[in-house]
Image (cartoon, rainbow, N blue to C red; front, side, top):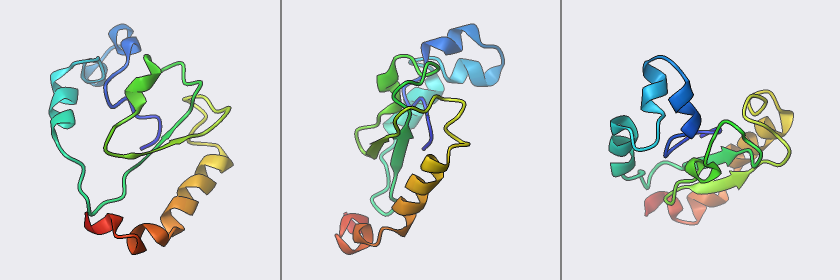
Length: 106
């Protein structure tokens, strides 16, 4: 996940359109997603920018069942265009220790 507001963002109250209402904290859409458990067969990693001014509160980007990675000095809009983000994702994909550690079989 890249800069994903798992528990919504306060800024969604200022936005328009159907996606905006879904990204509001405590929306039905986010509540239903939050009720689902992450699969133990899929490696889920959250990549988050610590200075993301679009995810308010910042803790809404975290999810307790997933790995968390903070990418320094990158804002919300730039997270998709940063070579450091691409490299971090590639490193996670290529990391064989996850499969070998048994985490994939939890």
